[in-house]
Image (cartoon, rainbow, N blue to C red; front, side):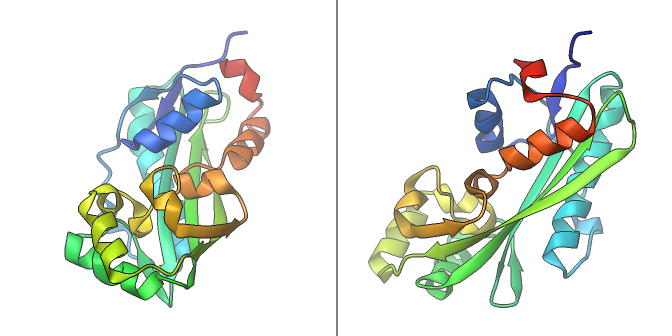
Length: 196
């Protein structure tokens, strides 16, 4: 039996690239899910609800496919941060985060043809931010990169210079925990190699 089509319900090029690098060629269909309808203060519950909403919004369009939805948020100093709304917000956030530690949460929701219910999991990684000067922060934000990322940073680009270390899954910080996805696929009756 051949594996179903793999659909990524996300516009994230980083998530797509992780899958491609691992041998999976996903069909990308970004969700139109309205994230504003989910109002939760717990980061784990928030990313799980958002990932589930995205996957379930796309799954009806691909009834015989495996559909993966994801969402990430940074928990830092008692606040939850998605993508910054402006360069000024990104600069202010980095001034707070420099030299500190945050937790990056990513929710994963998987819907397969074998089991049409939604399997939802989360991964969390501790992120240790480097101490950056105001000049470094302003240059990084001016590059535009942090404006498209949860927490206003990425480790697979220019932001990698400013992350001292991670505790936990490193691909989770890019937006998709590959070890967690492997376990979710196994629970749904698949192996990663089924999609190669």
